[in-house]
Amino acid sequence: MLLLASASPARRRLLEQAAIHHRVQVSGVDEEAIFDPDPAELVQLLAAAKASVVREHCADEAITAVLGCDSVLAFEGEVFGKPADAEEAIARWQRLRGAWAELHTGHCLLPGLAAAPSRPVRRCCVTTRVLFSELTDEEIAAYVSTGEPMQCAGGFALEGRGGCCVERLDGCYSNVIGLSLPLLRRWLAAA
Image (cartoon, rainbow, N blue to C red; front, side, top):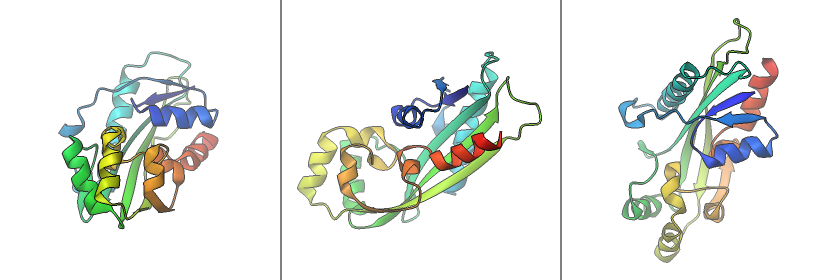
């Protein structure tokens, strides 16, 4: 059984929709304490920290693997996690409208107690380019007022209302939601 080291309901839904049997244990990692100027490396460090903490506290021998994930949106050299407040979400959306950005999701898969000792640690960043719609100030304010952007890296949820604010994706769709299902499928198949 897979143990997901994440509080993200979107990641849980992805695993459920893909019929991947799993449990959830939140890591409690202080994300602010981890930094790297490279967003692709940052998300891998965060994913590895979450997976490591959860694995360290897992005594369940039915767990075959522990998956940690973390996502950020990179735009013009700046990294966007979850917006601090509505004002910040609006300002970000005003910058992002009509532009491309990169959504980076770090993945770390650690062997669980039930795994063979030789099973490798896997770590990877999957990047998907996102083209945002050319929204008006009124559309941005209306979207931010739903509260949805406050819960998501980059300030949008592709699987929610934010889906109509995205024109195009270049790369893995599920990655933008929170984890790359094709990558996870390959990793689990190799185990």
